[in-house]
Length: 197
Image (cartoon, rainbow, N blue to C red):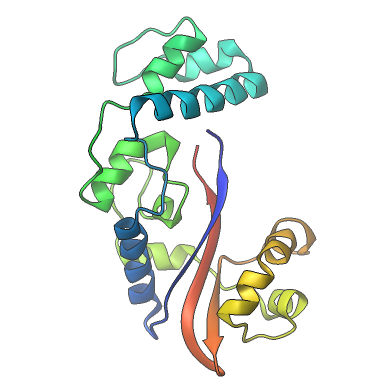
């Protein structure tokens, strides 16, 4: 499928770890992530498109090697074998973030929930997730918004400019989150990232 950019607003809390834990749970509860248990026809179309891009980027031989070892026990020799391997057997949504992470595995969730696990798909404590994130610099905030205290409306209005800055214009690696203000008081957090397979 390829990685994708995502962003989420969540409630502010002076305890950033608690704010991130709440945001992750809210994203899960809202279903704001890649849902691989969609009807099989939808899955097949999405996965076929992603598989074709993967093959175009890396070649069929490479992609066959990537999927050589899989949970379905299929020895892939064609594009259709890869699609079959990537298709989900699950038709019910996961009941927890842990179940989602283990289910989506390499495809990822294309959301902050991709930050919630280690390389073995074990859930990390909220403190570890919060430690992965860094605030966007004052320089970046001033460049994009003209203030170090942007509002929800300013972020929504300048989201494209923010992504351009973070990905292309920043002279140094930028952060992942912004404290969002309402009447000069912290009101929300805005977290952005790129993840997924």
